[in-house]
Picture 1 (cartoon, one colour):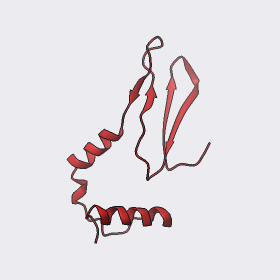
Picture 2 (picture 1 turned 90 degrees about the vertical axis):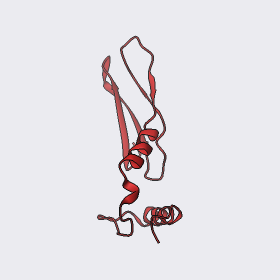
Picture 3 (picture 1 turned 180 degrees about the horizontal axis):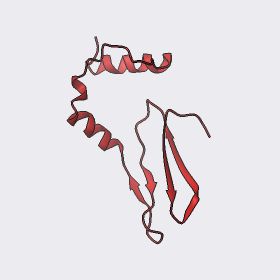
Picture 4 (picture 1 turned 60 degrees about the horizontal axis):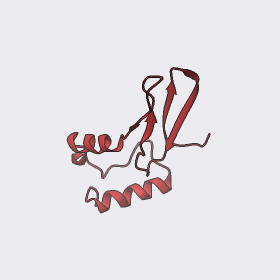
Length: 93
């Protein structure tokens, strides 16, 4: 399995020994993934990115002080990406 900072794991009650793993990186928007319901029902598509976006807006995370470095720090390529993104959004000078 590939290394990724974030993963979602889904399993079906009818096949508990099997797992579906969805991985994504820090820079990725969350893609929808399939979630099983009852054994005879079709999977539904779960879209988490709109929920994350809404939590950011409603949780007032945009009001935090983004000038401080993260602890522990991100790997250099991700830190540079994050710095650019925060500057573009006006959250860092």
